[in-house]
Image 1: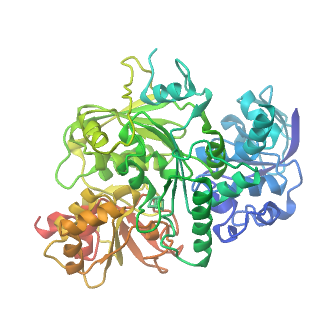
Image 2: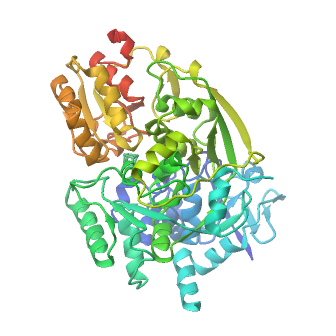
Image 3: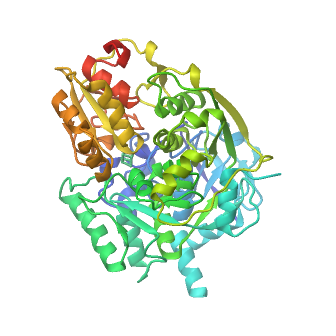
Amino acid sequence: MILNGRAWKYGDDVDTDVIIPARYLNTSDPAELAKHCMEDIDGNYASGVSAGDFIVAGKNFGCGSSREHAPIAIKASGARAVIAGSFARIFYRNAFNMGLPIIEAPQAVDGIDSGDVLAVDMENGILRNETKKREYGIATVPPFMRELVAAGGLLNYMAGRRKGK
Amino acid sequence: MGMTLTEKILARHAGKDRVEPGELILAKVDLALGNDVTSPIAIDAVRRMGVKAVFDREKIALVPDHFAPNKDIKSAEQMKKMREFAREYGIVNYFEVGRMGIEHVLLPDEGLVVPGDLVIGADSHTCTYGALCAFSTGVGSTDLAAAMISGEVWLKVPSSLRIVLTGKPGKWVEGKDVILHIIGKIGVDGALYQAMEYAGDGLSSLPMAWRFTMSNMAIEAGAKNGIFPFDGITRAYADARAKRKYEVVAADKDAGYAAEMSVDLSSLEPQVAFPHLPSNTRPLSRVGNVPIDQVVVGSCTNGRIEDLRSAAAVIRGRKVHDGVRMLIFPATQEIYLQAMREGLMETFVVAGAAFSTPTCGPCLGGHMGVLAKGERAIATTNRNFVGRMGHPESEVYLANPAIAAASAVLGRIGGPDELGL
Ligand code: SF4
């Protein structure tokens, strides 16, 4: 499967407080959270993002608390995946558990600007920047994680397994 | 090639002979933990899935500590949700106010975590139990829900960073200073996705309390876990407390490490982490004049009896500075009682400090000691992020309990030697 979309580019150490500020955590309704996604770093994101776009960032994306509201907000905002130099590890888990694909691509992110059109082939590990006409290899997502994403997250995946038993 | 401590424990829990860094495994958990902030989300998920029984009633721990005793109506509702779930599902290890404590001190002290275990918790400081030669790591609420149902967790096997400790620490240097020094050196993502594994002859001068502090702050270097080898010090602690039999694990001589660093304990000074990152450290002698409004001694990092003893030894016979509020938070009821028996409580109260029931309270700016705009605190906690203890324009400095206590007397950040100690 190849994912196509536009990039929304941010810097290093984007923390969970910027992804979804603590003042909105009195709800876990995805649509409500999506309205405030990235609000403190980019007031245009929530209203401007189109389904299928990518969030692209530098190193240590999602650092800070273990709150799951962060990947929930991103997923509900319509972003197809997050591409970053590296991810804070609890965010990494939470994203897969929520069914939000995340892609580590330290070589590629520097050359991506906001608005660039990207094509990501997760199975074959290729990221193409269509705007800049450049192609990068990316780590392929292990089959188990792809299953999680395909099932729509860990709990759906487990529900499927339990039925199968 | 042989396996590291972390690889061995993970392999054993995944039912495999060996695992490699980067490999994804499904592993059995010996204990799954949730608190009053994270478990309500997991509880909702379990109920939504229509699951009527957890995988094992004895292998789940639910600890209300962040906003306990109930801070307000919202936290009371969260706590009620936990309590009702615990009752309905027969969760054995639910800890009510009056019998509770801060999760990461409570569980090992209660003997619920033993050497060789694999523990996950929906709290980032679950890595604390690495001190016991267990694998433990923080996860999200969905992981907790899944583990409560299935008893399993998916994990990516981390590579290991070997940290060799040599020499003996000098006066006023504690475990807190060792870990602050390491984080200052490698940075807040210096061990991202990795296991920090300690080794070296310096270990013999690190008591359990200090090891817990060091494992607790592994996450502050981005690490998945921070693990100590099993030795006589571990054995003495575990044998006195373990509620289950345990199997000792040791790293192989030819284990493969992603990197290695060494720390000469004898060369360390007490460390202070300046706002707003735990990696922003300076040796005490280079702190300069930093006046403070509040001192907090406690938390899962430094709320143990040894920590209270260390602070009390400095404050005994002295007074908290006029311009300073000092707050002491023993991590558990057991520690509270012990502090009472040893007269530490009296020492603190006579000095003019407040002595609290166990709670996370001020550590996360929750309650019981929140900072106003422009206020500055020195704390024995683990995070000094923007707004961590209150207003976004307040400041938190991190240090060990002896430094915190000396600062309470001085009214600015300073060490016990300035008090003639
Ligand atoms: S004491 Fe602080 S760091 Fe520890 S569990 Fe409580 S809130 Fe978290």
